[in-house]
Length: 142
Image (cartoon, rainbow, N blue to C red; front, side):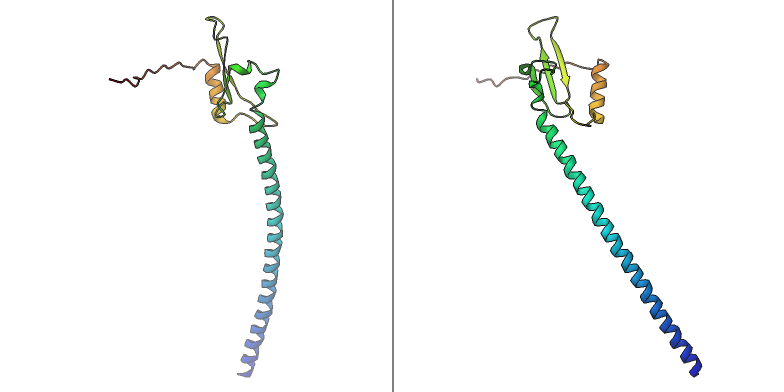
């Protein structure tokens, strides 16, 4: 009986030390993952801040682009929309033959057209542009 008790005690002791070792290893892995996570979080935040700054700069600069020499139409002919296309412009409106409509999208840096903007560009290029005139009754006094 004493022999069995000694064996059981020894096994429990071994299990205790093994489990403590396993727990220490797991705690170390958790700490390593926390450090790795914090590094990644810092990099993600820095990237987000950089991208946000670029977006804000782009949104600001797009208001000044019509004043550049290479803008395709006079600034006084432009109307800012912002989304989904930045500008719509009407040039030569006094002429029956030269009057034209321009859609202008401003991009900066490595920005590219979004899906909706690509669809609009394609619709314009393929001539799927329509005129709609809606007449409503005015406010008449009796």
